[in-house]
Amino acid sequence: MLRRGVSRRERSLREQHCGMDMGIGLWCLQSTATNPRAFERAYQELTEDARLAENSGIHSLWLSEHHAYYDGYCPALLPAASAVLAATNQLQVGTGVLLLPLHQPDRVANAANILHTQSEGRFHLGTGMGYRPIEFAIKDQNISQRLQLMNAGLDTLQATVNTPIWVGVTSEKAAQRAGRRGLGLFISGAFSRDVVNALIAAHRTAWETSGSPGGTPPPVGLLRNLWIVDTEAERRKAVEWVRSSYLVYAGLGWGADNTGVDFAGQIESSMNGVEASATIGSAEEIAEELDGYDVELVVCRIGYDQPPRNAVTEVVERIGHELVPLVKELGATR
Amino acid sequence: MRLLLDLRDVESHIDRRRLANEAEEHGLWGIVVTGPPGAECAEAAAVAALTDTVSILVDVDGNETHPTTLAEEIAVLDQISRRRTMIIFRGSPAARTKVADLLGGLPSDGFILSPPPAQASVPVYTPEDIPEAKLADNARQNAEVVDQHRDANSPFLIVSWNGPIKELARHLVGRAASPDFPQMIADLADQIDPID
Image (cartoon, rainbow over all chains, first blue to last red):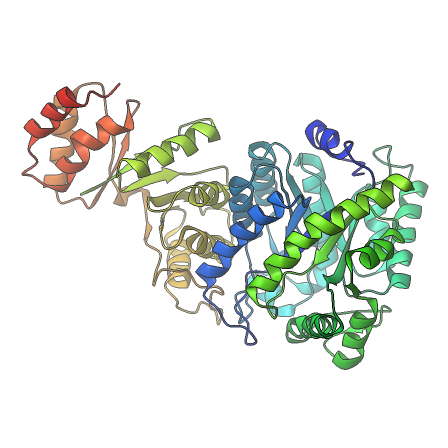
């Protein structure tokens, strides 16, 4: 259950079922070297995919942000989220994540509150710190000040925003900071189960030792690389899609200390780690695997560009029609 | 001259979206929307997602906003709206130039907008560039207002209108487009197909 900062309407929707919510992500709206396409098509497919997800019973769709990258990685999530919310009626939409130090927090707050109100509480504001020097340079910000900018931004958002706020983290220290604030945690799909569990524990402990702000434990959202397959040939193909989807992070230079993930310096071992933590199999196998995580939300990371369009739409439908009921069933059993 | 329906003062987002749809349905050339600083393009994106052809003029506050951020938001909006975005920019000339350059595909301080807008260049206007008229419940007066702006060779006119959108479209869109507008046909249409 989302335990803090949720609207009455959302809480009511959430109470109708047990277990974790299942979302899909990350929609980045790119035209990559591996799969060049028209941006207009990408944005059109975003709303089509959102409607498909909604009709398939999926909880949420999550968008992702970068700036000044050759492939047009979406730099402005709030207009994109607004379009998706307008095109749907039930689907929740989140930013996973908006790079807060690169924005003016009061502008973000204004837009978030508009989206919250107009969508009747279906918008989630996921935030992160950012790591690419060029992104800070083009916004005239000093990357060495990113933690201070992040903290100041969260102060503003917590004082002015009505929508649920999540924080994307890559370290236990960052998880602790989110926990102390009573904010939701959003965890990368690249991390192993051990790293995920350590982040969750750090978040929960910090929340508890800080006087439990908000009164109920803040939620944890977990990105997972997964794909529903029926045959060994499909499994091999899906593994390749997952591995190659991280090529973009090699280009972006992403890595996280003490997690075994460094797509800038150790791409092959990082991809091996991603492959090892990915869940590719039948819906039953995936549901069993996910049931081992103590999280409120799983975002199935399927929104990358290597799979053909029909494979993406098929897996969206299968997640909604096959995986979501199984996960609910397991949650109810627990 | 092309007419744009002003939705900036329409309080309810449900009404704004309904009126945007009606404007599109009845062939108005564009609509005008805005929002609190930072939410202008989000508001426009919602309208864009619910319409197909109507042009969307977005009134943005560029005074306290980083020009790169604003240009990124507009470029994404132009992709969402499929080339239907235009901008009224409120802010310093230097900031407007930077935003317009980025939206036109030019580098600024070594940075090139990515993604670019869908259009070759998103038009960026000052508030003074596009005249505005508040239309009243007086057909003769409204016709005179439109005639004046059309004859002054204004390419656009933003109109505030509280009546039925079909009435605006029937009587003033054609008049804005041409000095030869046959008012008699619009009047006859009112008899054949009264607008309720």
